[in-house]
Length: 195
Image 1: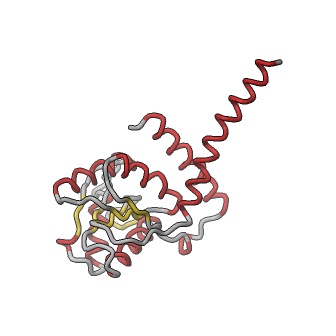
Image 2: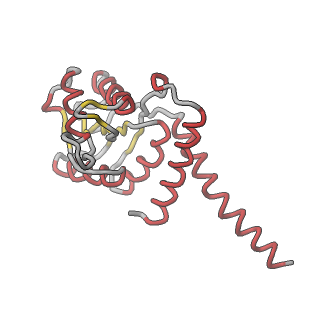
Image 3: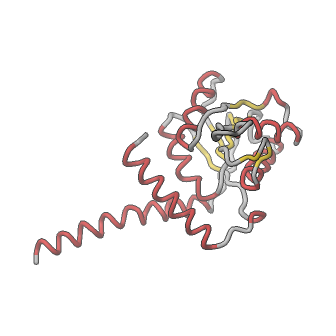
């Protein structure tokens, strides 16, 4: 009986940590940390033959808003490409932002990174070359906690997150719940492996 109680306690503890992570992710998703930084960093997303997907456009539009409102004079775009793609996510992002009035010389980019960790590591490489320390990260709301955690671990300081808006994307509650589950699992895996 005593062993069963201890097993129950262990199971409850193991369940509590992911629940706490999920709450942290949800809380961060509702917090817009509008703050000046050395660079605005836009996390990549799908693009189709050089044209950003609706999700990517939402991120880029928000980065444009932040740039135009003086939060930083440098934008870093990220993202590689899938096999068969002609353009990287970073290339399509740069073109989109230039077409929307941001000068090309204010945009830095890395055409590598097929996931969040790889992309942020490539951002770190760019940042070192350009003496960038503080970052204002732009991605989906539920992505904020994970990208802040990784960026902090890479040595950026301070780190802020300013999420794009779900308003124009019409995401259902089911979709958002799935994204929360994905982010919780991804953050848990990152914290366990730290790579």
